[in-house]
Length: 384
Image (cartoon, rainbow, N blue to C red; front, side):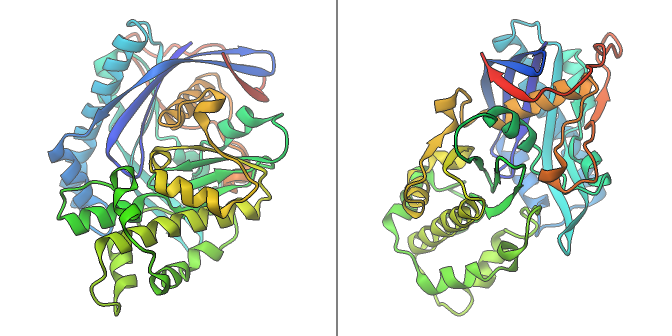
């Protein structure tokens, strides 16, 4: 089955569309990557989305307009991926949508909201669409994240030692071989917020770590940031920009006077590296397989490697999954599992009471024609 996975992470810079050929072969799920295309959000939509995200507020009308505009943008990315990567022969779209709120209270997740109405994708492509993946796991008592954990577990199974999969997007998360998985804290969220804030919106992020490379870490600021209670909470746990946003940084900066932008960004970069390294050590990792936009920041990755002596940190590209596209491929896998009636969660990773078949399905142009249910979930993922 040719599946297109659509993903826009907490950095909300672009929609990634990855296409894969997926087949079940006994206990194995075979994945043949067909490539990825990326569609940046246009400036107006990006500004509207940024204004709606915490700590901003949005009216029901603004949420409705965002749901439609994001849905149309995802539809355009899916159409392009089908044309350029699948030759017009895709059979399914799996859309993560755009997370705008993750409702966490006292460590428990009560709800989550991803925008990007799947009807626009189904109408534009004519294909069935699996979307709204996280809600079912939350209803089963889980955190609703990290959902890529099941894919990580299948993919890294049998690799020697204790390899962990790390994704560094706006929020960073990891998956350990025993199924332990959690958000470690901010990946690039605070770095991006600082870059935008100090540049008056001219910069969306710290390109190539240039700001951090010119700065010096401010020890007292780092110590204050590390006192955030989230870091000490036990797994499973999830977080988002509801916590790690510009006001979080402003609160931490209070009383320090005017610090150079480069020093603040360098400190935030070390904060991410430090909290990720602490999490990696806590699960006894012997190897880190990293993906996500944060892997393109050489200063961040150098800091992380320096904090993990003896633990190799390598990009997922070395194992066959492009670091920029891994999450999009993961949701293609989750969509494939859903239409085959198979669970897409691992309770040890999300804290749910049981595994769940994820998402809601929007029929395509020819109605809803699902493949025959599979008898059992695969135990490993093999890349072709």
